[in-house]
Each structure stands twice: as C-alpha cells, then as structure tokens.
Length: 121
Image (cartoon, rainbow, N blue to C red; front, side, top):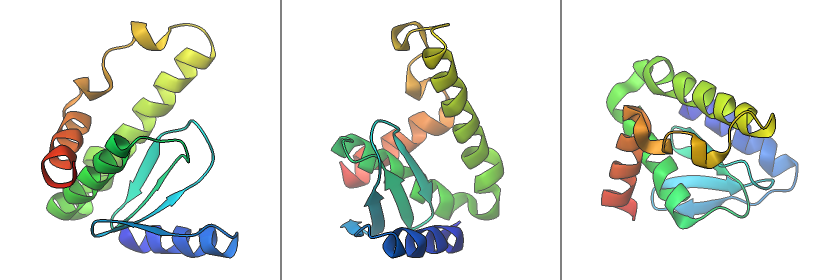
C-alpha cells in the first residue's frame, strides 16, 4: 500500500500539489467534499476536511501496519466500496446522510477512528 501511495504522491507532486506531514504520514489535500483515502504512510483527503478525518486516515495507516498484506482485502476494498455505495445512495437521493447508519458503525471504520483519536487526535 505504501508503494502505491508513494507513486500517487509523486503523481500529485508532478501535478503541483504540495505534501504535508501529519505525524508520521505524508498527506495531500486534493479536491473538495470527498473525504479521504489511505495508502500506508501516505493519505489523501479533500481540501476542506476536518482534523478528525486526518486522524481517521492515519488510523487506517496503523491498521495497514498491523494487517500487512491483508489490509486491502479486510479493510481497504470494503471501506472504499462502502464509501462509494453510501455516496451513490445520497447523490441518487435514495437516502439522505441522516438515514444512513453512522460511518463508524462498521468495525474497520470504527477501529480507524479509535486508533486515530488515541494516537493522533
């Protein structure tokens, strides 16, 4: 995941985005209103995101260290799929954000938030 994050970071730098440090992570703020995504030691968040999202994404980084090669299967892809599905429901006006279960209602998101708050909050 970190190698993929590094490649995406190089691409972001080439496009003119400046990296920031968030504790041991390298992060980029790109675009608006989309949340964030973690790639090991690198993560990408929307420009207008809260510090809590930075901590949450750093929490996913710890999950990545602990789970190693299982991270994409157990956390990464399920998290991405769930986030895209939730966004699709809201954009299609099938559900409002208030009608959806809390974001942290699934174990891997709750754990990322708890880890992020404990170590980076």
